[in-house]
Image (cartoon, rainbow over all chains, first blue to last red; front, side, top):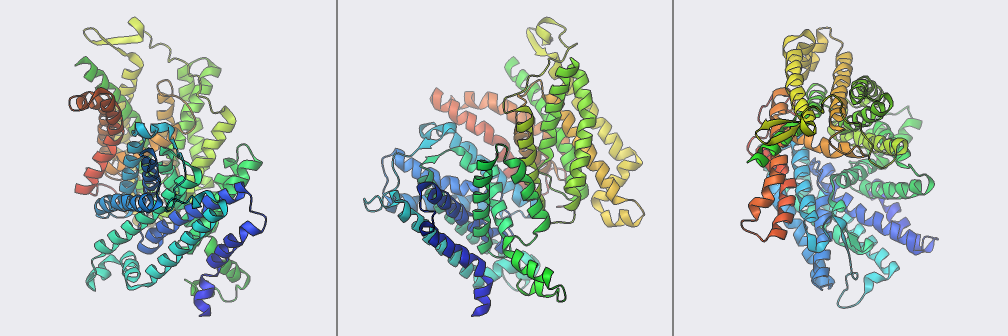
Length: 325
Length: 310
């Protein structure tokens, strides 16, 4: 019992801290909005981490699923529909359908080619959204109202929205962790480590990967629908490839080994961006080098930092570093 | 008809610029197995330095020439500071670290030059003929400068081909691309080979930026769009293949330019004019990616698989 608890300690502490944040001086609108954004991006990052860490599939087009979820909300809004029981399932289904079609093609390739083909599909989605002139085209679209649930405007309440995001983030994290630990997840990991051997014991990686890809897409759609509600504004920039790069960065900065790391990565990036941009005009001059340094010196990500530090201080037994992996 | 010819020439010239950037990217990827997202930054710096030095010295050509050593030095510095530590890392780390470099250099450019597009001198000496152009077909005048770029785009690939296929350094580069361990076992300093290839690629990208500066707006982030298209080029052409990169660059340049000009008109046959214009513009932007996805689907290794299979 203590071993899994220790393994997930950092992610659990983060979720608890997020639950306590509104009561510890982060209750004003700005801070809560920021945390909501971080949690939503955290959901998308966790779903991407499922692909990168679990299945070894590095997608550089994951922002497209988020964008499709967000644009579903916007399209219903333009049609005068804002009932969550219609909008959210539709957003998730649209993103999952996109993932199914593009995944079916992309998963035939691997490695660098997979990165490039997911990027290509992401770019196609990006240019498609910028051609929706009735939804603002390049300029984007401002929502008339946030999504309602059975006619109630629950999401307008900041605190309710905060806990809704937190609950969904926790759900996505628990679901992802359970999924990776299941037989399905073991096949995914086996296929990542050694496709030939997985094939030899009778597992075709393709259908497993496709299902994982569609699930990640669905969660991306959910995150997108929430993000549209959080910012009440959607533009094609949400689907740009740099946004996909940012999501990948959250995953890596947090640590690829465990999907809980993606939550840490998302929080770290959003908060760092926000605080640096308040302090400095040209804040990316600090942010960029920090990202480079984190790649060079934190190969296991933030979630791998504590065991790494422990190992560094206890250099007598360097083997311990691998014990958690 | 003449409209199609102009678009085809524009496409060729854009393809040539893409090739100059993609060649370095492909060499670095083929020889060092390094995914360098920051290669577009070299293109942008080339354009900025050429524009600024051009205004200082009063000659566009002098500025463009001086941007070459600057691009080379920046390439060497970046290699020493960042990329050298990434050769042994996985592709993921490389994508991310070089993504950090993009953010940094884009921001530094914004801090040094501001966010507004730069003024660029006209390339002097090429304003011969009526309105600075050459009459290519009766009644059709095409800018001389753009023709010069196409010319450079024929000479540079030939030089590059000679360098890679016919010289000792080129032989080492080719060998290093397929069997790096073997080459270093033969006593070649593979580290230095990497550095030279990297800096050379950076210089080519900077040169492309300098050439592009009078045609495209010189503004922050200008390298990012070009970079993505260059990845498309090297993936379509086959990673590490210079010949593949050349053909794919021309293909992408032509598809992009001709598609932009023709698709809205074609769609007008089936759609009403305003939606034809919008759908056409979106489809034209997508065209390159659609072709790339199709090519990868049928030929995952690209059109001319060569070098290291990644």
